[in-house]
Length: 516
Image (cartoon, rainbow, N blue to C red; front, side, top):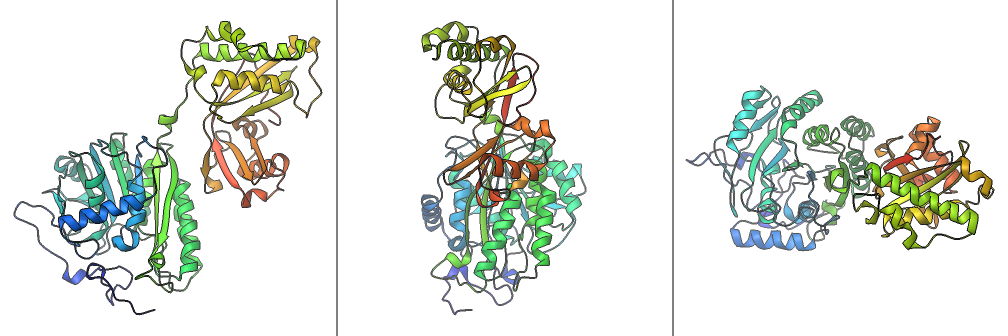
């Protein structure tokens, strides 16, 4: 370990060498007369005083990652809680996914205790939280209600006094959110996965779009730089899989490796597991935002013993939802049938103005919205063409018209003949935008279509393919990688993976696409 000159508010201790500035024996053990919880780690984990703290948070937001989906508000976040000089930018990247001034009603922060163990969680019920930027109003009514509803949530305040993992998140919220939000601060003392599930069940009624949930946790503690990067990547992928059981399994596997210096792969695992018990049933999509570790700090970090930090945001798929009425579907099928007929009989597509009659049956503007789509042609139940594209920015009606015309000349099949048109059945799959995933565990066969891309090579299978053939995740990936992308059975392991969903409908009962 190299000798470092630590800034005053990030001083290291011998007892807790990796918790930058944590001195548990010197932490405040009292509250103010009003019952407020005073700032305990100002001057150590972040600057003391309103002006320097505000300047520091402003700088961190300026250097943070930009919002992945401007205007879309996350339902939940996983953010780190070390000293700002080490993890502040990553935390700011997470909070930067929130639209400025977004009016969340309540913010639930789940923070695992670094000081004591006790069953369940502790809620601060008798006052507000304080930082140098001012008071953060606590939703005392909700906190007291939680303590009355279950023995797993106790009103004891000792767990909050001096605990840094919750406090360090507050200045980011104070700067980012509209005034008036209420805080529900929960310190978790449990180390029992079953209690994490029970806590999630207690919190589930509050897990709505009007509230934000934040899980506070750093990643690996004290391995060397290279081991930290590998371990943190695996842990982050497990979080992105949005499956609490899979995360626990990954943490167990990391522990079994016996990496030198590794004390934990996820110090706030109980908070993150509790959060995943909420986000997983809600089918939220988890997206990676940012990563760093303490070794990346050029002034004070070293590469011998590092702590990792990652930010993950959870978004609702409802905000991306694309719905079609029965009239919309009939209009799209009419467009596709007209396009196929024109190509077969006349060798060209119909002019755009000829589609007005077909579109007039639609009662919504969905056909003019940009979307991706595939059109599949069946003759007597056998696939004779399947062509489409992801969202190119063109109106859905145009995409269906173009895809239907192209499917007539799908090079895998012999050209359609005029006498076959009477036996033709069309199936249309309207696609949601593909999203990149970081772990194959995120793929749900039968629900997700997959898209594999490496360089100029790519391939896709629509969601219904796995259902039709009864493929599991491994076979779906292998066949798409080998047969569609040309990368070999295991080529997907070194490629980018994307998933999407589809609204599938046809003008007759049909077989699922055999090889879209």
